[in-house]
Amino acid sequence: MKILLFGGAGYIGTHVALAFQERGDTVGIYDNFSSGLRENLLEGSIVYEGDILDRTRLQEVLAQKWDAVVHLAAFKAAGESMTRPEKYAQNNITGSLNLITECVAAGVKNFVLSSSAAVYGEPVYLPIDEQHPTNPENYYGYTKLAIERHLQWFDTLKGLKFAALRYFNAAGYDPEGKMTGLEHSPANLIPVVMEAAVGKREALKIFGDDYDTEDGTGVRDYVHVTDLADAHVRAVDYLVKNQKSLTVNLGSESGLSVLEILEASRKISGQKIPAEFTGRRPGDPAKLVATSKMANSLLGWYPKYSSLDSIIASTWNVYHRHFPGH
Ligand code: UDP
Figure 1 (cartoon, helix red, strand yellow):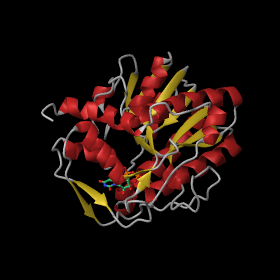
Figure 2 (figure 1 turned 120 degrees about the vertical axis):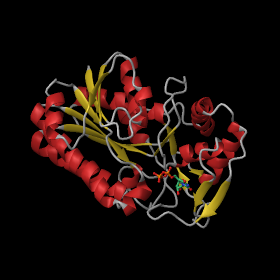
Figure 3 (figure 1 turned 90 degrees about the vertical axis):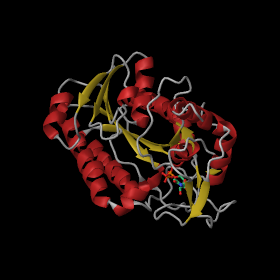
Figure 4 (figure 1 turned 180 degrees about the horizontal axis):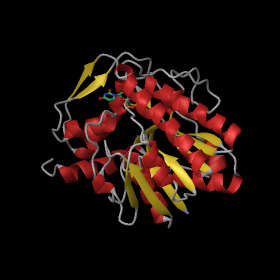
Protein backbone atom coordinates (compact mmCIF):
# COMPACT_ATOMS: atom_id res chain seq x y z
CA MET A 1 0.00 0.00 0.00
CA LYS A 2 0.94 3.67 -0.29
CA ILE A 3 0.83 5.41 3.08
CA LEU A 4 1.37 9.13 3.59
CA LEU A 5 2.49 10.25 7.05
CA PHE A 6 1.92 13.87 8.04
CA GLY A 7 4.44 14.73 10.73
CA GLY A 8 6.28 11.61 9.63
CA ALA A 9 9.68 13.02 10.57
CA GLY A 10 8.85 13.47 14.25
CA TYR A 11 9.68 11.24 17.16
CA ILE A 12 6.58 9.06 16.83
CA GLY A 13 6.27 9.53 13.06
CA THR A 14 9.70 8.10 12.27
CA HIS A 15 8.90 4.99 14.30
CA VAL A 16 5.57 4.67 12.48
CA ALA A 17 7.39 5.06 9.14
CA LEU A 18 9.74 2.25 10.13
CA ALA A 19 6.82 -0.08 10.94
CA PHE A 20 5.11 0.50 7.57
CA GLN A 21 8.33 0.26 5.63
CA GLU A 22 9.37 -2.96 7.36
CA ARG A 23 6.28 -4.70 6.14
CA GLY A 24 6.80 -3.50 2.60
CA ASP A 25 4.53 -0.46 2.21
CA THR A 26 5.52 2.63 0.25
CA VAL A 27 5.89 5.49 2.72
CA GLY A 28 5.60 9.21 2.06
CA ILE A 29 6.71 11.66 4.75
CA TYR A 30 5.16 15.14 4.78
CA ASP A 31 6.75 17.36 7.40
CA ASN A 32 7.64 21.01 7.93
CA PHE A 33 10.75 19.97 9.89
CA SER A 34 9.96 22.38 12.71
CA SER A 35 10.88 19.55 15.04
CA GLY A 36 11.42 16.74 12.54
CA LEU A 37 14.49 14.54 12.82
CA ARG A 38 16.24 14.32 9.47
CA GLU A 39 18.69 11.73 10.81
CA ASN A 40 15.77 9.36 11.46
CA LEU A 41 14.46 9.44 7.89
CA LEU A 42 14.66 6.04 6.29
CA GLU A 43 16.20 5.26 2.98
CA GLY A 44 13.42 4.59 0.49
CA SER A 45 10.79 6.86 1.98
CA ILE A 46 9.66 9.79 -0.13
CA VAL A 47 10.08 13.09 1.69
CA TYR A 48 7.83 16.09 1.00
CA GLU A 49 8.76 19.24 2.83
CA GLY A 50 5.58 21.14 3.59
CA ASP A 51 3.28 22.55 6.20
CA ILE A 52 -0.28 21.46 6.93
CA LEU A 53 -1.19 25.16 6.88
CA ASP A 54 -0.18 25.29 3.18
CA ARG A 55 -3.22 24.07 1.24
CA THR A 56 -1.58 24.25 -2.17
CA ARG A 57 1.25 22.01 -1.04
CA LEU A 58 -1.26 19.62 0.57
CA GLN A 59 -3.21 19.42 -2.72
CA GLU A 60 -0.04 18.77 -4.69
CA VAL A 61 1.10 15.87 -2.50
CA LEU A 62 -2.34 14.36 -1.89
CA ALA A 63 -2.93 14.26 -5.66
CA GLN A 64 -0.46 11.35 -5.81
CA LYS A 65 -3.13 8.85 -4.68
CA TRP A 66 -2.56 7.37 -1.24
CA ASP A 67 -4.31 4.34 0.25
CA ALA A 68 -4.21 5.85 3.72
CA VAL A 69 -3.10 8.97 5.51
CA VAL A 70 -1.67 9.03 9.03
CA HIS A 71 -1.83 12.40 10.75
CA LEU A 72 0.83 13.01 13.38
CA ALA A 73 1.61 16.65 12.61
CA ALA A 74 0.92 18.48 15.86
CA PHE A 75 2.43 20.37 18.72
CA LYS A 76 2.26 18.14 21.77
CA ALA A 77 3.51 19.95 24.86
CA ALA A 78 0.55 20.03 27.24
CA GLY A 79 2.20 22.63 29.47
CA GLU A 80 3.01 24.99 26.57
CA SER A 81 -0.55 24.68 25.22
CA MET A 82 -1.77 26.40 28.39
CA THR A 83 0.40 29.47 27.84
CA ARG A 84 0.40 29.57 24.02
CA PRO A 85 -3.06 28.34 23.00
CA GLU A 86 -2.99 30.38 19.73
CA LYS A 87 -0.06 28.30 18.49
CA TYR A 88 -1.98 25.09 19.21
CA ALA A 89 -5.22 26.42 17.70
CA GLN A 90 -3.46 27.37 14.48
CA ASN A 91 -1.40 24.28 13.89
CA ASN A 92 -3.38 21.52 15.58
CA ILE A 93 -6.93 22.63 14.76
CA THR A 94 -6.69 24.81 11.64
CA GLY A 95 -3.95 22.64 10.16
CA SER A 96 -5.92 19.45 10.79
CA LEU A 97 -9.05 20.91 9.23
CA ASN A 98 -7.04 21.85 6.15
CA LEU A 99 -5.69 18.36 5.99
CA ILE A 100 -9.04 16.62 6.49
CA THR A 101 -10.79 18.73 3.86
CA GLU A 102 -7.98 18.28 1.34
CA CYS A 103 -7.96 14.52 1.99
CA VAL A 104 -11.68 14.36 1.22
CA ALA A 105 -11.18 16.47 -1.92
CA ALA A 106 -8.37 14.14 -3.06
CA GLY A 107 -10.47 11.01 -2.51
CA VAL A 108 -8.51 9.63 0.46
CA LYS A 109 -10.63 6.93 2.12
CA ASN A 110 -8.69 6.00 5.26
CA PHE A 111 -7.38 8.40 7.88
CA VAL A 112 -5.47 7.53 11.06
CA LEU A 113 -5.27 10.25 13.71
CA SER A 114 -2.65 10.46 16.38
CA SER A 115 -4.92 11.36 19.30
CA SER A 116 -4.23 11.43 23.00
CA ALA A 117 -5.26 10.38 26.48
CA ALA A 118 -5.34 14.12 27.15
CA VAL A 119 -8.87 14.15 25.67
CA TYR A 120 -10.14 12.60 28.92
CA GLY A 121 -8.88 15.15 31.49
CA GLU A 122 -9.02 14.30 35.18
CA PRO A 123 -10.33 10.71 35.37
CA VAL A 124 -13.64 10.03 37.05
CA TYR A 125 -12.75 6.32 37.14
CA LEU A 126 -9.73 4.14 36.40
CA PRO A 127 -8.60 2.49 34.25
CA ILE A 128 -9.88 4.78 31.51
CA ASP A 129 -11.85 3.13 28.72
CA GLU A 130 -13.10 4.77 25.53
CA GLN A 131 -16.52 5.48 27.08
CA HIS A 132 -14.95 7.63 29.77
CA PRO A 133 -16.21 11.26 29.59
CA THR A 134 -13.99 13.58 27.57
CA ASN A 135 -13.25 16.73 29.49
CA PRO A 136 -9.70 17.86 28.61
CA GLU A 137 -7.79 19.61 31.34
CA ASN A 138 -5.28 21.23 29.00
CA TYR A 139 -5.71 22.98 25.66
CA TYR A 140 -3.58 20.42 23.83
CA GLY A 141 -6.10 17.73 24.81
CA TYR A 142 -8.92 19.96 23.61
CA THR A 143 -7.27 20.30 20.18
CA LYS A 144 -7.13 16.51 19.84
CA LEU A 145 -10.76 16.13 20.89
CA ALA A 146 -11.82 18.81 18.42
CA ILE A 147 -10.07 16.97 15.57
CA GLU A 148 -11.72 13.68 16.58
CA ARG A 149 -15.13 15.37 16.45
CA HIS A 150 -14.44 16.87 13.02
CA LEU A 151 -13.46 13.42 11.81
CA GLN A 152 -16.76 11.99 13.08
CA TRP A 153 -18.62 14.61 11.04
CA PHE A 154 -16.55 13.97 7.94
CA ASP A 155 -17.24 10.25 8.32
CA THR A 156 -21.00 10.88 8.54
CA LEU A 157 -21.13 13.52 5.82
CA LYS A 158 -18.36 12.47 3.44
CA GLY A 159 -17.63 8.82 4.22
CA LEU A 160 -14.04 9.40 5.35
CA LYS A 161 -13.21 6.44 7.60
CA PHE A 162 -10.90 7.18 10.49
CA ALA A 163 -9.06 5.52 13.35
CA ALA A 164 -8.49 7.82 16.32
CA LEU A 165 -5.62 6.34 18.32
CA ARG A 166 -5.63 7.76 21.82
CA TYR A 167 -2.04 7.33 22.88
CA PHE A 168 -1.22 7.35 26.53
CA ASN A 169 2.40 8.42 27.18
CA ALA A 170 4.57 7.56 24.19
CA ALA A 171 8.11 6.66 25.24
CA GLY A 172 11.17 4.58 24.30
CA TYR A 173 13.17 4.21 21.09
CA ASP A 174 13.39 1.50 18.46
CA PRO A 175 14.73 -1.51 20.43
CA GLU A 176 17.13 -2.41 17.60
CA GLY A 177 18.70 1.04 17.71
CA LYS A 178 17.61 2.04 14.18
CA MET A 179 16.44 5.47 15.35
CA THR A 180 19.19 7.69 16.60
CA GLY A 181 17.88 11.25 16.33
CA LEU A 182 17.08 12.97 19.61
CA GLU A 183 14.18 15.34 20.06
CA HIS A 184 15.18 19.00 20.30
CA SER A 185 14.06 20.82 23.47
CA PRO A 186 11.83 18.03 24.72
CA ALA A 187 9.23 18.73 27.40
CA ASN A 188 8.09 15.17 28.12
CA LEU A 189 9.27 13.48 31.26
CA ILE A 190 11.53 10.70 29.98
CA PRO A 191 13.63 12.75 27.52
CA VAL A 192 13.91 15.46 30.19
CA VAL A 193 15.19 12.85 32.67
CA MET A 194 17.68 11.68 30.03
CA GLU A 195 18.92 15.21 29.39
CA ALA A 196 19.49 15.61 33.14
CA ALA A 197 21.35 12.27 33.10
CA VAL A 198 23.80 13.39 30.41
CA GLY A 199 24.27 16.87 31.85
CA LYS A 200 22.37 18.64 29.06
CA ARG A 201 20.17 20.22 31.70
CA GLU A 202 20.91 20.88 35.32
CA ALA A 203 18.17 18.86 36.97
CA LEU A 204 14.80 17.26 36.46
CA LYS A 205 12.06 19.46 37.84
CA ILE A 206 9.39 17.27 39.36
CA PHE A 207 6.04 18.99 38.89
CA GLY A 208 4.24 18.53 42.20
CA ASP A 209 4.69 16.24 45.20
CA ASP A 210 1.18 16.49 46.61
CA TYR A 211 -0.98 14.65 44.10
CA ASP A 212 -3.37 12.03 45.40
CA THR A 213 -1.08 9.20 44.27
CA GLU A 214 1.05 6.73 46.19
CA ASP A 215 4.20 8.87 46.28
CA GLY A 216 2.55 12.24 45.57
CA THR A 217 3.93 12.58 42.01
CA GLY A 218 1.98 12.29 38.75
CA VAL A 219 1.17 8.81 37.47
CA ARG A 220 1.04 8.00 33.75
CA ASP A 221 0.69 4.98 31.50
CA TYR A 222 3.90 4.79 29.43
CA VAL A 223 3.64 2.87 26.18
CA HIS A 224 6.58 2.05 23.93
CA VAL A 225 6.67 3.96 20.66
CA THR A 226 7.40 0.73 18.74
CA ASP A 227 4.16 -0.72 20.12
CA LEU A 228 2.34 2.45 19.09
CA ALA A 229 3.84 2.21 15.61
CA ASP A 230 2.53 -1.34 15.27
CA ALA A 231 -0.96 -0.12 16.16
CA HIS A 232 -0.92 2.31 13.20
CA VAL A 233 -0.22 -0.52 10.77
CA ARG A 234 -3.05 -2.52 12.31
CA ALA A 235 -5.38 0.48 12.21
CA VAL A 236 -4.81 1.00 8.48
CA ASP A 237 -5.45 -2.68 7.82
CA TYR A 238 -8.63 -2.52 9.92
CA LEU A 239 -9.96 0.49 7.99
CA VAL A 240 -9.17 -1.01 4.60
CA LYS A 241 -10.81 -4.32 5.54
CA ASN A 242 -13.85 -3.11 7.51
CA GLN A 243 -14.53 0.38 6.12
CA LYS A 244 -15.59 1.36 9.62
CA SER A 245 -14.22 4.07 11.88
CA LEU A 246 -12.88 3.38 15.34
CA THR A 247 -11.55 5.16 18.41
CA VAL A 248 -9.23 3.21 20.71
CA ASN A 249 -6.92 3.73 23.65
CA LEU A 250 -3.32 2.64 23.34
CA GLY A 251 -1.70 2.16 26.71
CA SER A 252 0.30 -0.41 28.61
CA GLU A 253 -2.38 -0.60 31.33
CA SER A 254 0.09 0.11 34.12
CA GLY A 255 0.68 3.36 35.97
CA LEU A 256 4.14 4.70 36.82
CA SER A 257 4.92 7.75 38.93
CA VAL A 258 7.52 10.39 38.13
CA LEU A 259 9.66 9.03 40.97
CA GLU A 260 9.46 5.48 39.61
CA ILE A 261 10.64 6.70 36.20
CA LEU A 262 13.46 8.63 37.83
CA GLU A 263 14.59 5.65 39.94
CA ALA A 264 14.56 3.26 36.98
CA SER A 265 16.50 5.78 34.90
CA ARG A 266 19.12 6.16 37.63
CA LYS A 267 19.49 2.40 37.86
CA ILE A 268 19.71 1.71 34.14
CA SER A 269 21.96 4.66 33.25
CA GLY A 270 24.15 4.43 36.33
CA GLN A 271 23.94 8.24 36.52
CA LYS A 272 22.96 10.26 39.57
CA ILE A 273 20.37 12.39 37.71
CA PRO A 274 19.80 15.48 39.83
CA ALA A 275 16.14 16.25 40.54
CA GLU A 276 14.19 18.82 42.52
CA PHE A 277 10.55 19.30 43.38
CA THR A 278 8.73 22.34 42.00
CA GLY A 279 5.05 23.29 41.89
CA ARG A 280 2.43 21.52 39.83
CA ARG A 281 2.26 22.23 36.11
CA PRO A 282 -1.14 23.68 35.15
CA GLY A 283 -3.32 21.24 33.21
CA ASP A 284 -1.72 18.05 34.60
CA PRO A 285 -4.13 15.38 35.88
CA ALA A 286 -2.91 13.30 38.85
CA LYS A 287 -3.22 9.89 37.27
CA LEU A 288 -3.95 8.47 33.83
CA VAL A 289 -4.02 4.73 33.21
CA ALA A 290 -5.64 3.03 30.23
CA THR A 291 -7.49 -0.07 29.50
CA SER A 292 -6.66 -1.09 25.91
CA LYS A 293 -9.20 -3.89 25.62
CA MET A 294 -10.77 -2.37 22.52
CA ALA A 295 -7.43 -2.22 20.73
CA ASN A 296 -6.82 -5.82 21.84
CA SER A 297 -10.06 -7.08 20.39
CA LEU A 298 -10.49 -4.85 17.30
CA LEU A 299 -6.86 -4.60 16.19
CA GLY A 300 -5.31 -7.67 17.83
CA TRP A 301 -2.89 -5.16 19.38
CA TYR A 302 -0.90 -6.09 22.48
CA PRO A 303 2.14 -4.10 23.62
CA LYS A 304 5.38 -6.09 23.54
CA TYR A 305 8.02 -3.54 24.47
CA SER A 306 6.23 -1.41 27.06
CA SER A 307 7.85 -2.65 30.27
CA LEU A 308 9.53 0.08 32.31
CA ASP A 309 12.97 -1.43 31.74
CA SER A 310 12.54 -1.77 28.00
CA ILE A 311 11.32 1.83 27.69
CA ILE A 312 14.13 3.31 29.75
CA ALA A 313 16.90 1.07 28.37
CA SER A 314 16.00 1.75 24.72
CA THR A 315 15.94 5.50 25.42
CA TRP A 316 19.16 5.48 27.42
CA ASN A 317 20.93 3.62 24.58
CA VAL A 318 20.28 6.53 22.24
CA TYR A 319 21.22 9.27 24.73
CA HIS A 320 24.31 7.37 25.78
CA ARG A 321 25.39 7.13 22.14
CA HIS A 322 25.12 10.92 21.77
CA PHE A 323 26.84 11.64 25.07
CA PRO A 324 29.38 8.80 25.38
CA GLY A 325 31.12 10.36 28.38
CA HIS A 326 28.17 9.33 30.51
N1 UDP B 1 6.77 15.84 34.50
C1 UDP B 1 7.67 16.33 35.45
N2 UDP B 1 8.74 17.07 35.00
C2 UDP B 1 8.97 17.33 33.69
C3 UDP B 1 8.06 16.81 32.73
C4 UDP B 1 6.97 16.07 33.17
O1 UDP B 1 7.50 16.13 36.65
O2 UDP B 1 9.96 18.03 33.35
C5 UDP B 1 5.63 15.02 34.95
C6 UDP B 1 4.26 15.57 34.58
O3 UDP B 1 3.78 16.45 35.57
C7 UDP B 1 3.42 14.29 34.45
C8 UDP B 1 4.43 13.26 33.93
O4 UDP B 1 5.71 13.78 34.28
O5 UDP B 1 2.97 13.86 35.72
C9 UDP B 1 4.36 13.05 32.43
O6 UDP B 1 4.42 14.31 31.79
P1 UDP B 1 4.69 14.45 30.23
O7 UDP B 1 4.88 15.91 29.92
O8 UDP B 1 5.79 13.53 29.81
O9 UDP B 1 3.38 13.88 29.54
P2 UDP B 1 1.83 14.31 29.69
O10 UDP B 1 1.23 13.24 30.57
O11 UDP B 1 1.76 15.68 30.26
O12 UDP B 1 1.33 14.23 28.28
